[in-house]
Amino acid sequence: MRIVSRAVGLLFVAALIATAQQPQAAHDQSMSENKMAPHASAAAISYMELKNAVSELDRARQATAKYQDVHVAEADGYQPMGTEFPGMGVHFVRTMEVKDFQIENPPILLYHKDINAPGGYSLVGVGYLWDAPAGPDGQPLNPPFPKSLAHWHRHENICMLASLDNPHELSESQCREKGGHFIAQTQWLVHAWIWKDNPAGVFTAENPTLK
Image 1 (tube, rainbow, N blue to C red):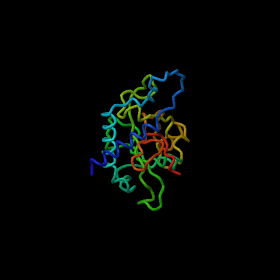
Image 2: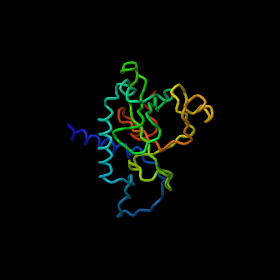
Image 3: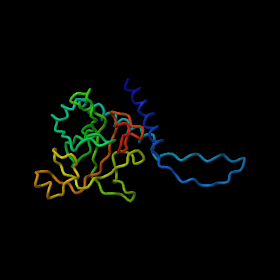
Image 4: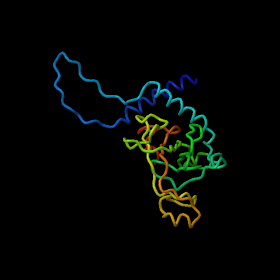
């Protein structure tokens, strides 16, 4: 069963790569009748990189399966940060400052409100942080997922306070006065939609199926 799961995962991620590629400018090229038409460009990712990414996501699913019950997540220290945002769900955060990347220990869990799920929330994905300087391409250096698959982003002016509907609504002084922890700029963040399929891509910021 595990071999089948990985094979299916490879096909799934490969399909995501095709849909996640950035559109390229069309260019004219004269072709003679005896010349072969040019091949379409593909994402710059090797077979081993793709295989490893699928294996890592499979490990993440196994490690977070217990968090399908949100009560288990809360008992492990995850707390909701803000309300549910369309396409992104509710972020249950354990920390916004990590030292080491651990695929089986995501600092963020993504939930969607669901009255039929335990605790009223359905697990839809996970979020990872990466502490690194930006490279010339505007992405973090040496990220744990291939750049052709995952696009990382940052947030600014975050107030870590469970009672806030919007973690961006307070200034640093207001946040501290209320007992919150203010973060001027977060580490690099990426979402991985491993518990609810995302037609836009497994590593995209938003999942259009979350309404």
